[in-house]
Amino acid sequence: MALLGSVVSRLPDSVIKDIGFVLLPGFALMSFAAASEPFRAANVIAGQPLYRLRCFGESARTVAASQGASIAVEPLSATLEGPLDAVLVCAGGYPATWHRPAIHAMLRRLARKGVRLGGISGGAYLLAAAGLLQNRAFTVHWEHASALSEAFPELRPRQARFVIDRDRITCGGGIAPLDMAHALIRERMGATFARQVSDWLLHTEIGTPAAAQRGCLAERYQVHHPILLSVLETMEATVEAPLSRQAMARDVGLSMRQLDRLFAAHRHTTFAKDYLRIRLERAHLFLRQSALPIAEIAFATGFANQAHFARRFRAHFGMPPSQVRRVDLSLGEFS
Image (cartoon, rainbow, N blue to C red):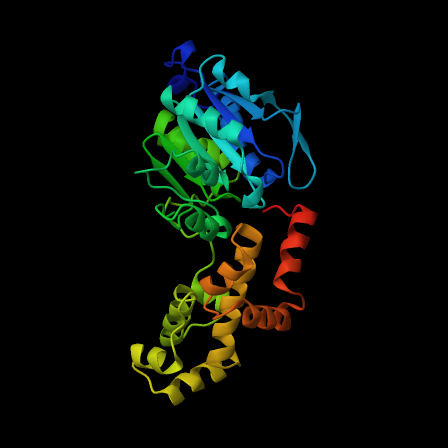
């Protein structure tokens, strides 16, 4: 099925590129498939091997994905055997389980050898832990962004689908790796060939690197009033130090009564209740995605003390903060 044989035939046999995937238990199968299948498709379309894919794990012969499927892997030590052009870490789930010194050491060795390194979904967190994202633009799945920034305050992930910055390749996960793989194939094989690969996968809408990972604010809140959207955006950005109703109204040029009317008409709630919900949902995310003590999470979401936070949290979610963390760990929940 060499659709572009005239193009590919000009490549020497030695041009096969080896791409490695380091899989952590609970990695998202969708993200892995979206990242790997375009390279397999490229081989099929070219009618010759352009890419060779290899999978690595810490110890076991297989690694289980989030929904239970197992992928056969080579040991990490095999990364030192033979050339690897790029190695991408696939991680999902709970950052507290990502303390993987063996993987960190392996990534640093590969970096010294000049191997291109990347992370998919939560994979950038491991690159950060290995000290390999300094002075690099990068992204991570939006669910893990807060946890990464708390753990590595000197780093700031971009809210992008994928980022390619020289020898670092990072991607938010989900189906975004399709866009990332298209960019990498285009980088090497040209736009025409990359388009053929994407068409073969029915990947007709190719996202740009800077495209959003999540639905826009208007879609998420089902709100289209520009001033109210501005208020909601400010609420999301100020969970640690919430603004007063008076200060928020002044910032958007409204009276407090006008602000109240906006929330009543478009959100069917009050300013205070919506702000509290946003802060509590951010706290819930911190509980699942960071190892911060509960007291620090309370302060990070604008509560004066842990007891007040716990009362509000239980009233909203029906369980105390400590139970959310226990349930999350026991379920092995992966994203």
